[in-house]
Image 1 (tube, rainbow, N blue to C red):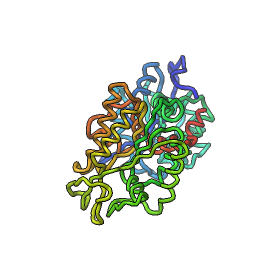
Image 2 (cartoon, rainbow, N blue to C red):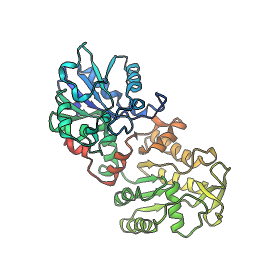
Image 3 (cartoon, rainbow, N blue to C red):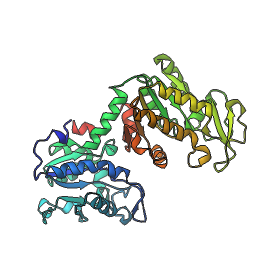
Image 4 (cartoon, rainbow, N blue to C red):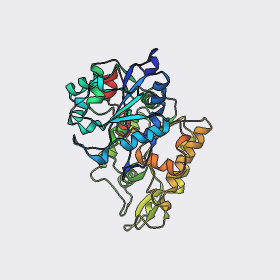
Length: 391
C-alpha cells in the first residue's frame, strides 16, 4: 500500500480525496467535530504540496435520495473556517459532472455533495466509480472508518487511477498494528459495551495475542451471571452463556487472564444514587451500573503492569455522574501512564470518545480511533475491503 507521503510530485495534480465527514448534525449544526479535525492534516499536506483537492464524503444514510438535512454544507463551511480557504460545494448530480466543470475559478478545493445521495455508491457500482475517477489524476483514501464498506468510492475507484492512503488512515493502521502484530508486551484490553455477541469475535481474536482481557460494562454482567451471581434488573444479553464459556476455555488454553468486576455500584434505576456492593450481595430489585473500588484498584494495577493498552467501551452508565467513577478512573490512569511514557495506549468507540471528551483527556492518549465498525472489524482479524483495494 502506497501513501501520499511516498509521492514526490503533487503539483497541480487533481486528488480525489475520500474522507469520512459523517459527523452528528442537529438543526444544521455540527455537534462533534472530532472526525473532521482528524483529517485536516491530510488536507493541509495536499495544499502545501500545491495539489488540487476534490473531496468525496457522506453524512448519514439517505439511501440514494437527496435529503436536505444530510447535506455536507455545514461541514464544508466548518472546514473553510478551519483552513481559511474557500471551498466550492458542488450540488450538481455527480453523474452529470465532467472535468471541464471543475476548478473554473482557479479553486484549490472542491467538495461534492453527499455521495450517498446516489444509490450507486452503496451498490458498489463499477461504472459510477469509473465516472468519478475520470475527474481526478489520483485517489487518496483517508476514510479508514469507511474502509470496511464495499462501497463504490472506497473499493472501485482504485481500479481506475493510481491510489494512495492518507495520513489519518496511516495513523489508524499504525496504531492497530501495535495491538495486533508489532506488540509490546504485556498487553491488556479493557472492553465494555452492552452486547457480548457483537464483540465475541474480537475477544477470541485478541486472546492469543493479549496477556489480559478486562470485561466491564453491560458485557461484564454476562460474565457475572455466568459465574453464578445475582445481577437483579441489570442489562444483560440473553442466550450468551455458551459464548462466555468459549472465552474462558480459549483464555485458559492461550494463557490469557480474564478479569471481570469483583464489586459493583448498584441503583434501583438509572437515575438513582449509587451503593457499593460485593457480587454476592446484589439483590433482585437492583441494577449493576458501574464497577466498584476493588475492581478499579485491580484494573489500575493491571494497567501499571502493562506496556500496551487497548480501551474500548466505558465501565458503566457514565451518563449519570453517580455511576461514572469507574470509567473516569480508567481513563485517567491510562492517560497518566501514557504521559509518563510507560504505556502505548489506543482508545476507540463512540461512547469512549464521548467519555474522554467529558473529562478533557482526548489528547492524552497515543491514539484515539474514530473508526467505529472498521476499528472493530480490524481487531476481529477481518480483511477490510478499502484497505485491500489500496493494496
